[in-house]
Length: 164
Image (cartoon, rainbow, N blue to C red):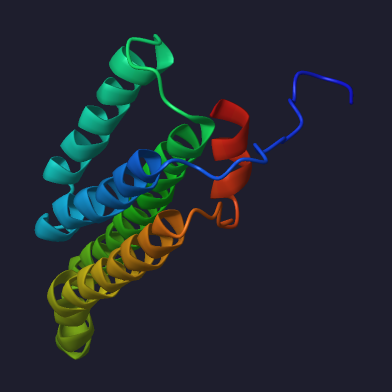
């Protein structure tokens, strides 16, 4: 293999119960913290990722606490998956609000219902849809972690494997 990409070699032994429960708590806990935030405003959501990243860097990356590959993989996959969902939600809300603001500049009576939808109603539905996606990811991935599996998520798993 060339380059600095390390090959993925999962351990053949089963992960410990402590690592499996820790991964489950991480998925459900991070999902619950994000679920409690309003993804439309965005300020509080970034603090969740700042906290998760700081904990990873201080305790796991600097080897203060010895952790298994299984736990590090799930820690990074949970953080990256929720960050991706959060980023997509923020991007879609920003696009809706930008288009709504641009339409409101024309100040045409026929565009007012569309502007109201884009500025008020649609971001709330986007928030609700992404909260549902967060709940699905937290429960399915947490269940797979509790079963001792290394589930793969598109885009996210390659990065989690590389950095774990």
